[in-house]
Length: 444
Image 1: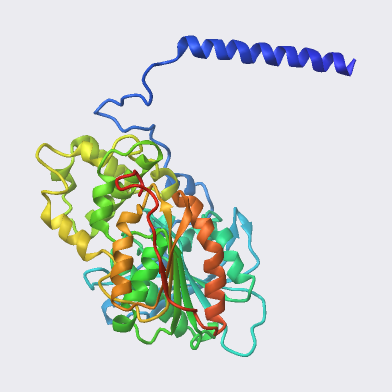
Image 2: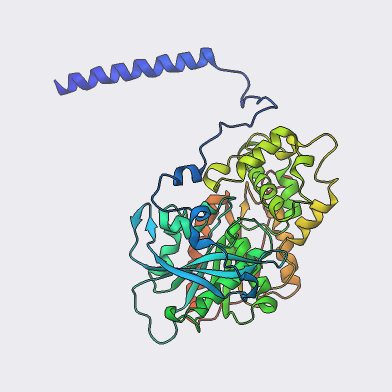
């Protein structure tokens, strides 16, 4: 009887499949992807993460008084503690067994105005003997425009997307520093990211209860997290020589923002079309810090302005497909373009990596093909570092795709940072860059 039932189910399944296949052939549309009307975005508008977070019992930063500026902020020194608190770290909503202390501290924005931002210091219950407990400063790829996307909040909510990667440093007994390095107003890819990382490390050193004042420190970050990490490494000697930095491991990080903007404003085929997200997000962010230069109302059509306004309150989860089928250049006002906006190009160049050569060891990797950050926006910065004598270890990973390379390079990054935190040598310098794809290949 069981065999008879199975034969009947198989017959029904086969009939459905054949019927569906036949219907698909008859009803197939000749044009794909569809052409989107010029007066709408290319995808349905999703709920934003802050709207979802309103359902949680944890106040988001814009409604949490703990994040407020002190009245005498200008009197604080960079890295000086404003206030602290102990919180519960969660992974997918489940409490994670690690001590977590959050520090609100003074730092500087890209114009050197005093601001406050937060960092979260995670200390495992594993004893550390023989030296001060080392610290791995983990710069998450925040890549967002709302304060509810910052790790000081997502660590509590259990939605920090890179928590699973961070645990392998905790398991070795290292402390983790996880800063809100885009500030509480969430700017993106500007040099104040490096200041905020360095001042977060000063802040944890300034808290005597943590016992980390003499700790050696390594930096880690991928993509947008790598930008914050490398900016900190570049600025350390001049801005925060008191921070004892042993090494920096990064990957998937844009070097030349002008080249990246040019790439992201051109219609790209297939998966590379998601590169438009970097320019949309960059415009929403830069317009906060440079409103007199990034004039969204003058640069974009009303439809483009609506997309930027929508992006100002989104995390990377729901923002990442913005522009997947339509780049930002298709929303320019008549006569407007990136190339005839010299002030925009100037600001992008000023905030590109390579302004300073880090004085500490670097491990840097990048995929041979990357739909978001093409190697063409990275390798010239690598060559500049190399020619100027940087203590650099760079290699091209022979596998494609941005997210795949986040995991591919993470394994050697954990091994290398763990070694330098234990006092081992960073190893010889090398520059193993190569471009196996033909010139002009999308994502190269």
